[in-house]
Length: 108
Image (cartoon, rainbow, N blue to C red):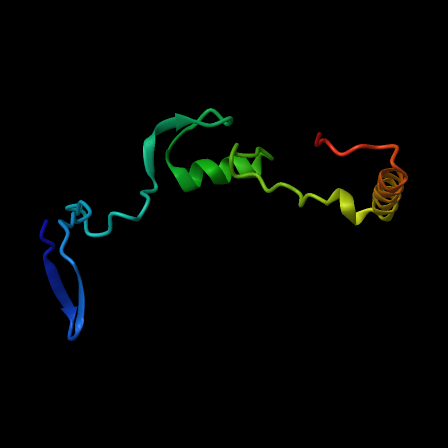
């Protein structure tokens, strides 16, 4: 088995592999999301073809677009001092029982 190498920088070599280029779009900026959408009815009874106008009307009426709502930050259970204290007590009790021989490990 022979391996072909290619020099990609002066003095640096790598194994020559077939490389596939990502498909290139004919659009000038393929990563930009368009503001145009098919005519869609909003709660005010009008049809909108602009996503930004559609969303603005929804926000003005107090609606939340599913998937774009901001969730409140979750608090960790360990932030509560009482939970920390109980966990430490439970671990200390388990260690004491193990040392006393009343609790076995899961091994034979």
